[in-house]
Amino acid sequence: MLKCGIVGLPLSGKSTVFNVITRAGAEVKPYAGGKTEPNRALVGVPDKRFDKLVEIFAPRSEKPAEVEFVDLAGLSRDASKGAGLGNSFLSFVSESDALLHVVRAFSNASVPHPEESIDPLRDWKIVETELIYRDLGVIGNRLARLEEKAAKKKTTPAENAEADLLHALQDHLMDERPLREYPLTEEQKRLLSGFAFLTLKPELVVLNLDETQTGEVAIAAPLEAAMKEKGLKVVHVFGSIEMELAQLDPAEQEEFMKDLSITEPGRDRLIHEAYSLLGLIVFFTSGADEVRAWTLHDGETAVDAAGTIHSDLARGFIRAQVVAYDDFIANGASLPACRDKGVLRLEGKEYIVRDGDMIEIRFNV
Ligand SMILES: Nc1nc2c(ncn2[C@@H]2O[C@H](COP(=O)(O)OP(=O)(O)OP(=O)(O)O)[C@@H](O)[C@H]2O)c(=O)[nH]1
Ligand SMILES: [Mg+2]
Image (cartoon, rainbow, N blue to C red; front, top):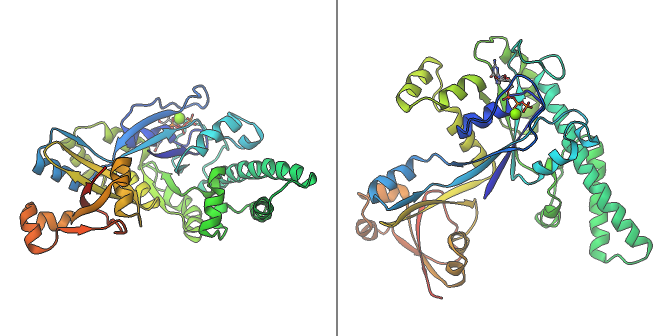
């Protein structure tokens, strides 16, 4: 299950953004502290193609692709040294596949700012620095263990290579640079995956604006420029207002969005951005029993798709019957018509699945 962790300073609007995405109604309050258990919710990925397939097949059950969002308590300055919830908080973050980093741009006089002024770039850096320190701590522990072994002349060549790499990463982090800016080979990435480094996780910056404040876009300009340089995407949300929006029924939502000139609800936007951030694609299985959307990483194959559905399907894989959703619709939602046109194909194990493929696995176990 894909997991997105929401991080940010205290009172930046993390729970508000969580509610925008999940409609879960988590507690939102103008003072920090208190609750330490994270809020969690599973969210179906909004997808018009999925909705259309459900309409066509009228299946007995339907299951959209899902993402879990986890809303954590605020990350304080010095968390990596144990301040606030400290390291227990940071271990929640390490479970996440991706980070949504909420940065406050709204100025709300009744909500104190932990740093006492609105400065999005400064805030982003405070949190980034904590993530960097956490990764340094993890590296320090591992190096200490490897050095103990080395002193007893018990390290393997692979461990010596690991120590060299960790020393290089340590230098890089000491320059206050995140690991995502270090050029790693695929093999090194595999080697490091067990460490769950926080600064290696894909990150989406969520700038939380208040639509009544006109000066905010200027306040956020330095953050926008810095993120552009780093290649991190910034998504704008009107936290408070979009949280209200998420609670309205669809007709009222349309009206409301028009008034605010929002084209896609914050919820859909954030989920889609998280998806593309992670390089994820969707494929469908469909029939009278069930219509279901499944998630794969871009570049994965037909046999990976089979394994996502069930390990038996991967083991006994023979062929995948594939048609692109767009071709299916263009041919009157008829599989025989798709076959006649040659757009319904049989593919082998190595076939690279494309976003929107409708797949049926032929297998034998
Ligand atoms: N005006 C305005 N207020 C906001 C906005 N987003 C959040 N707030 C207010 O800011 C306060 C904190 O919001 P939360 O979503 O609870 O913030 P948080 O980051 O989850 O806070 P902690 O979990 O305590 O760290 C609440 O009183 C919200 O109503 C916004 O876009 N505009
Ligand atoms: Mg909160």
